[in-house]
Length: 114
Length: 112
Image (cartoon, rainbow over all chains, first blue to last red; front, side):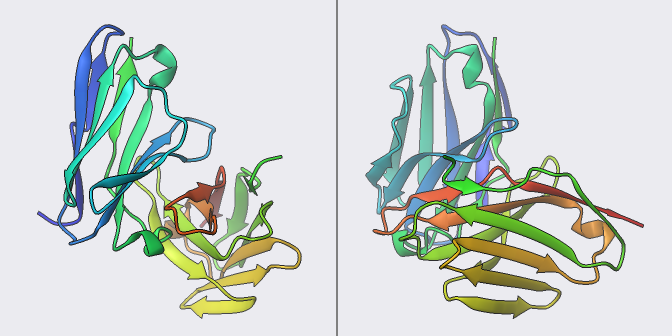
């Protein structure tokens, strides 16, 4: 395994479901990120973790709940989502917070909310 | 006002030409600037970064930064069809909080 791995790659869920996205990085990095990419919109930062401590919550609704048990793993727990939450969710890592511009992205989890 | 602004394109250039991609940013205190390339259906990958005013060259790519004008650009010389992708400009907000602001991206089409 190399780089940043995200599972599942595709997810379809109803508005009342609870699901989780998983991200794992094998780069020895200490900072991890969740980004949201919607059509026709810029990449939108959601959460930042530095040494498994959250340093940024970019005003994300509470129906998105991140979890970072260690520097290599990051989760995004989803519940009672809305159709407008359908998007590509990208996990990324960087060596440190100071290297936040030098991101390594996973392939993303394509989420569809029905 | 958008924090990082790019023309969404598409920008169409013939093979072998120079492609010029532009980006403006609103936060005058921004310190570091990045260009990512995103192929259709793929995730973004970092191709260039620049911290100081002036030009920075890496192979066929040149990043240009003008902090006074709050302007950063990416030049691609000898454009190839394989350069066809969306190019994302990103700016680091000062303070090392981990907050990177992306533009909407410019789609580049290089026609054979």
